[in-house]
Length: 180
Ligand SMILES: [Fe+2]
Image (cartoon, rainbow, N blue to C red; front, top):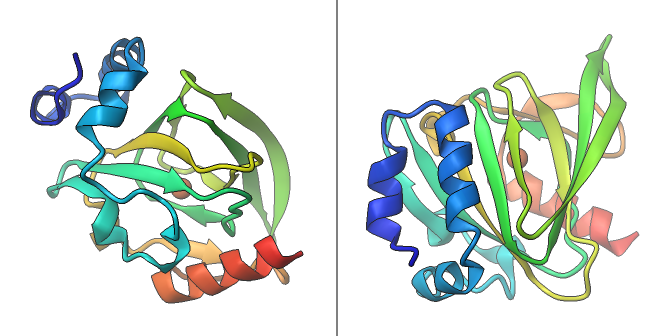
């Protein structure tokens, strides 16, 4: 039975490999995750929510988010500057990877995550996510640091030019991508 507090405690001080095991174990009972996290954002308009709405835990060493990704959502490429473990507990979250190429980015493969898939991202990873389904998808994202406080980067999805991560701009890029 998934309990938010004990999951957070279990993740504290652990490397990505252990968090991956913890998430895999939790995902054997996705229904109890859905119930435990029902109080956090429902994802109906994630593009308009502050990230804090979906924040389960934030400390200098650990950030845990409920990622409620609306139908058809597409993010621009971005990094985290820390490891991340993604566990999809309901629906699908496609990951597209990129690498730097001169002043811009080039595509570097991808992975479609379907519940109950778990994916570990190294701290150098640049990715974009998308929900290809016609309904909201839900995942737990665990990061090995203070994600909201990190000097992250993102890339304009049209020009692939690098810029400072900004939630407001991220949302407008996402809306732009979804309108295509
Ligand atoms: Fe991300």
